[in-house]
Image (cartoon, rainbow, N blue to C red; front, side):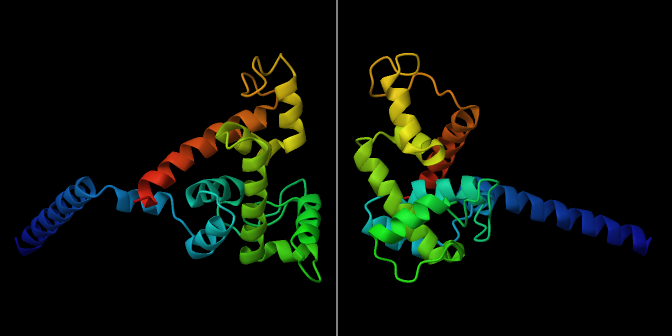
Length: 190
């Protein structure tokens, strides 16, 4: 009798805890979203997003899709770190930003990787007139490819927006980053 009573008490307590959890989640669903969409390196992102005038939530969405916040991520194309900076972009940035004694391994440093990524996003913002679709596509496929697509009526009717993206990977990437950008803005924005 005592064992049965204890099981019933445990079931009631578990039910009460579940109900409280559901009520709290409904009251403030953002806490669960923040578990699924963490914003690691937020302090660093905010520093460089401010310095290079880019949206920190866009940076977070890009990092989530590029590396899932793994500072040691390495792509099959040798892009490195949180924002998956390609060797050619890293070298170019190091020269333009006067980074002393630059070596590719430095791209695994979260601070430097995010700094270069934000710097590059700023360049893309200026190059593509703050058009978010083009900026995100260029971050993935390269600004040269996006510029060529804009000049091709098969991909752009007006030369300002993309009607079609010929790279399947970039089409998927664009959708995921735009989705995650909206989520990060909702979860962490004011």
